[in-house]
Length: 180
Ligand code: HEM
Image (cartoon, rainbow, N blue to C red; front, top):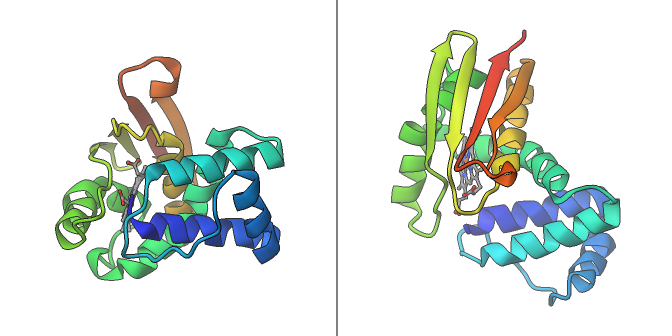
């Protein structure tokens, strides 16, 4: 996974627990403290191990942490990759265009980055359905990013998972409806 995810996970933990909290969480996770750089690539497993330790410490599920982390991550993605985001887009337009206009370009420009292939159907002006099939099974990150994008645009959305790999389905299908 691309280092921007690792550096942001570190920033997320520091925002909740402080620098010392990051160091102690890494140690609880049985990992060595090390520096992450956004343009390097690091094992997905390091994300899983830290998320698992964070969930244990907070007494919540790993999916809760991943979703909250996705929400935290959205503003950074929107800032770092601003040139890929059309100024006229709002939440559902951005999600609709993530695969073709954003993830595809990210994959081409940053060969280390392997964002998931999303299939997004615009059901109506007010709803998109995201089909997510990544082997990483991080649909909770997708839900968090969608919520974070909506917060960025000052919009309210209703996010419902219609199917989920974690419930034995072959794919995750996430409906995002614009409320206001
Ligand atoms: C400005 C918009 C976005 C940018 C620049 C962006 C870019 C990225 C990048 C660089 C990664 C790391 C991939 C890697 O290294 O393997 C990533 C991962 C991911 N992205 Fe996006 N993304 C954006 C929007 C979205 C949206 C709207 C969704 C879904 C609602 C989404 C879903 C995900 C998920 C779930 C991952 C975690 C990796 C995985 O599941 O395989 N992204 N994205």
